[in-house]
Image (cartoon, rainbow, N blue to C red):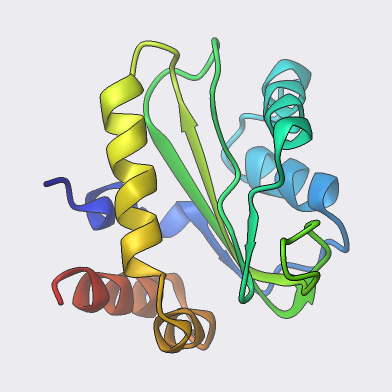
Length: 148
């Protein structure tokens, strides 16, 4: 099975997000990677209209397969305060994994989404990731959780 940690890149992890809502956080994550094209944000928001990807317990995994995305991209945002994300449990999201994939990457896209859900299914794992202070420590912690 795939290792999600292979797609975690320090430059794509933002600790201490300050946005207050879903759209703001998505814009911030996209801009950090130079993907701030309106069509990409529009595609993600269209996916969010189908069903919120705020899964609860402080976790959100917005995801979309979109034309214009050159390769599988995983962007991560951490907010100690939390961000309103229309989560199923009504609580703010503190850990956001944004998965972007070209439309042709169906299998990899689904595998990454499934593995992220598995690694983050325990509240303790989420707290450990949220408590990381640097992108390097986040990657190290994720790798240790992923190998369990």
